Image (cartoon, rainbow, N blue to C red; front, side, top):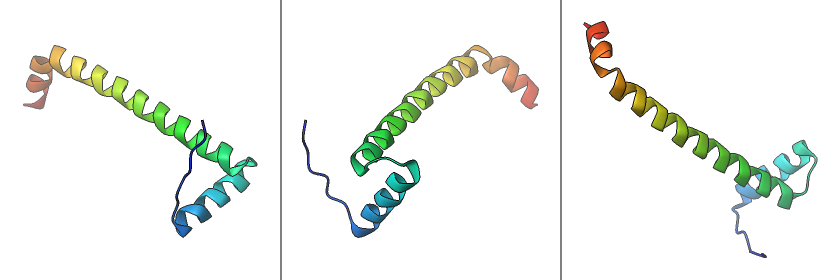
Amino acid sequence: MAMTLRLTDEQEAHLAALSEREGVSKQQAVVMAIDEAYSRRAHRAKLDSAIDIVLDRYADALERLGK
């Protein structure tokens, strides 16, 4: 799928620096950034869910430890 990506001059400079540092094209650098951001957010969502389960399960114990 083709798409147009509109960037500010600063974003363009960041993209150019990133692609050069990684040794990939700008297009590939954008794809890598998208994949990385998605993975981080998915991981964070799983972590948040696990934390909610633990806090719910051990709420009484955590409250007693806090006193």
